[in-house]
Image: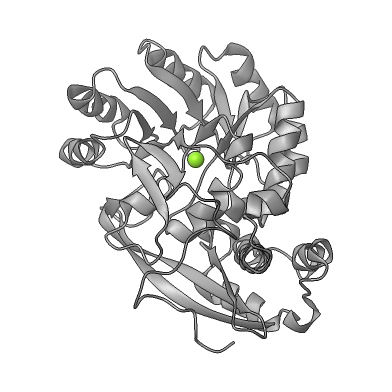
Length: 357
Ligand SMILES: [Mg+2]
């Protein structure tokens, strides 16, 4: 097998900010690394890494991981062993692992003419509504984003910014009755402030849940305190990375947001979702700023998720991959037929992660 990869700047259609974005006015581009594994017959499998700076990941650290990975030890004859090798080599760098495992499963699926969800022995992903995410910004910027989301039934509003009340008001001025999911991205400063904010949000009957109100660095006691008092369901994102976290969080959150860039790939993502369901937790699949390639990997697991927050490809000015459809805010794979692998090819004339290792 041959491994190639390439760093790509994904350009956003509008500036993008959350409570943790350092750049004033938000970011305009976001780096991902596209990985390609090819077999002796030239069949290619693709995967995407969207490195998370908060966890010391950058395009450079992804490249370093890939360059030093023992690709000669990967085998398509034993997918389980190869997945274990990807999970067990080195430390950290979950986005890089995710890209490599995605490419391996895409390639294995294409060779055996089976979709990845079938290789993983999970439910077929059926078309399902996704939320459209409204980033932090001025009232005018919030309104502009809400206008772009006209076809979506569900909005996800980023809070924890300078004026949360003005942001919700701006959203409601254009979308008075849409379901809204709130994500504070750890932006509220302590449990008392978070409770006040959630009680205020609960006055709006169309708010469905609140994601990560408090810093993941706070003791479990703080999350539990809020969980016991919150009038709205609480979802863990920054507090939940892998299966061990899911088990710890029952009793502090009502559900978990599983992202492949945190789990390090699809196999661990399945574990997280299945563990959460066994524990009676709600399940959500989320994303970083990813193209259709990353979103398609997560969508393979959609049969295990109650909520889909898989919309970052829609926020891009240009998407290097194709093959997902969004009709009326419902996400599906294009076409009726079962598509082998991840089901999304690079667009013609677009990326072919062809740069050398
Ligand atoms: Mg989140």
